[in-house]
Amino acid sequence: MITLDLPPVLRPFAAGADRVTVDPGPDPTVRSVLTALDAPLRRRLIDEQGAVRRHVNLFLGQDNVRDLAGADTPLTDGDHLLVLPSVAGG
Image (cartoon, rainbow, N blue to C red; front, side, top):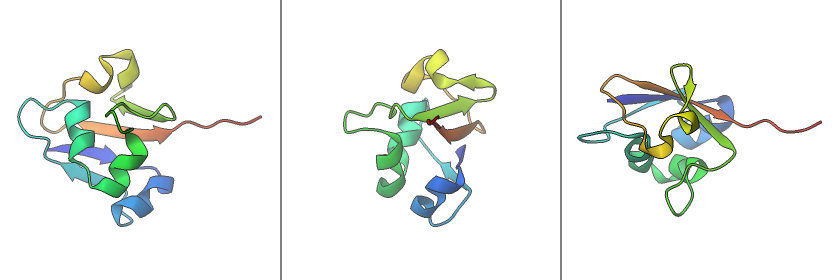
């Protein structure tokens, strides 16, 4: 099981939960976890091609998965992903 910690802006798409737990199947990756999410939340994190949306940052420990293997980053049972939307402005 993999846990995603959600920011307040995404919680309405997860029935108000601050975390969701996903069973991505054997050989889990970031992509398989995101694909296993319910549609309302999944659509906000990945695009139609299955790529992580550019305004979404996912952290595995201290590392942004974009700095690892991106959506193909391997995960192990019990891992936590932190979901952080990008902040822009001036």
